[in-house]
Length: 114
Image (cartoon, rainbow, N blue to C red; front, side):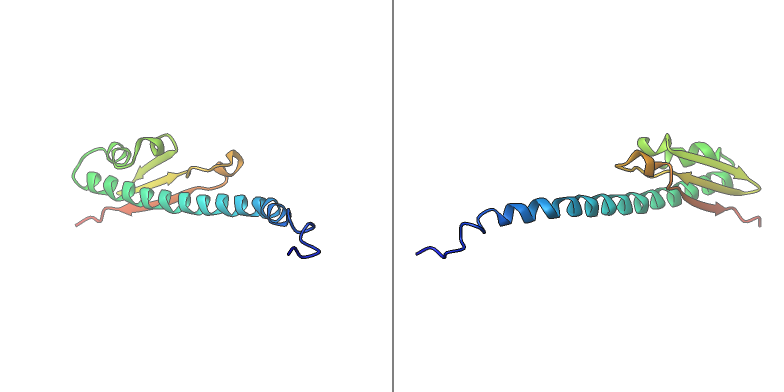
């Protein structure tokens, strides 16, 4: 036997899904952006350390820093070397182009003189 109000509730699940879909998409974009910033931070630290090690060994710190990261991040990376210090700046990937210009991750590593 069918309840008297069953006909009115037939499409409620679909409507709830459609209502929650924008929220789920926004949450997914935020989660992706946070993961991208975290990964870029790890890459910047790795590149700074590689650059400092190369600088300590007498090699080109900029080349070593760029070689330490994947190809996609090299185009989004800036390397600065001065007075025994290597500074790296990377713009993380972003699903929204406007956000891509707003975020930047930085890392430094220094070579201590003996």
